[in-house]
Length: 211
Image (cartoon, rainbow, N blue to C red; front, side, top):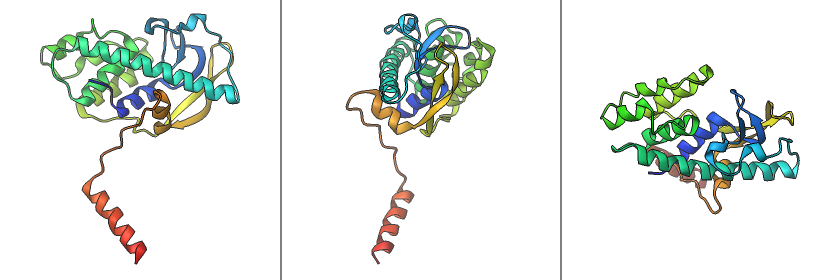
């Protein structure tokens, strides 16, 4: 399975986009969209921490999003290997978000529960380090159980830093479709399925305008 567009934006919203290196809540050097040394190249420990501006900011955001695109494919592959039972799309997306943040899909009690047929999602709450991550765990568990995507493809913050690794405030907001289009060269976001009612309303509106 692959992560859906909604799943990609869900993770992006949880992580935010930082176009340079920063220290996360536990002091780990992180880059872009939650990218740490454990995710592979580039190594944040070897990257500069200065905050780009102007055209350099746009290029840095593009690079960060592309790195996220490569990272999320790796974590999707990990979930595919770890989970041995069929999953619904929203369940898969929730588990990729969980592993993206914890790196624990192969050893989590959650994985054992799911593979044994227990889809209660209780294992999500077994990973609460640091404590402020609780809201994300609850969102992932809710997504796993109900298919409720919090992000909804609205706006993703691009965070600024003070130039030496401390987050400050968002320097811009990006709509979900903008993020997706930048993720992979030639990538086209999946169009949401329209209901029959919305199609009929659009058709009637068009006819009234012509009349």
